[in-house]
Length: 141
Image (cartoon, rainbow, N blue to C red; front, side, top):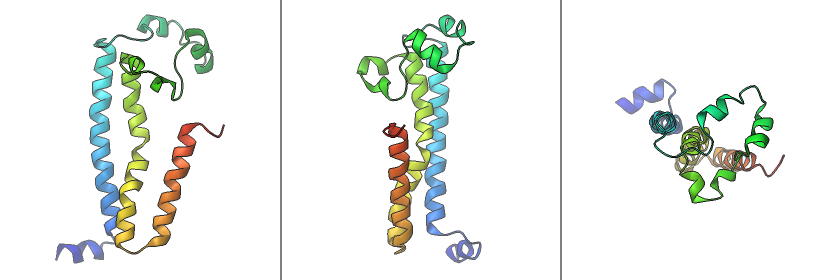
């Protein structure tokens, strides 16, 4: 009965999968954002750049600040494990995690498309993931 009601409302299996994954990713992301904020503000992990130094350079553009303070940019924070254990980098990871929400959702919709024998949308979702990963990697500038 409930499946018929959902079908009559135009909600298909793929939409349910996408929305459920997005809900879970959002909840985890929210917790990570709050945790990252407190790790940063309370300095539970050492900072790569002190808060007062960053505040003193807010007048600079992002590129100028990166150059002046020699801060990691892009994916360079993954260079060492020690870098990941910095409070400001840990805080940024939650934002990077949320930026991947679409990729997670698309990954989980692919099996749903395959179950529905919708191979065109399966292919489109796969290529969307590839494009997003290539864009995030910075290979093409």
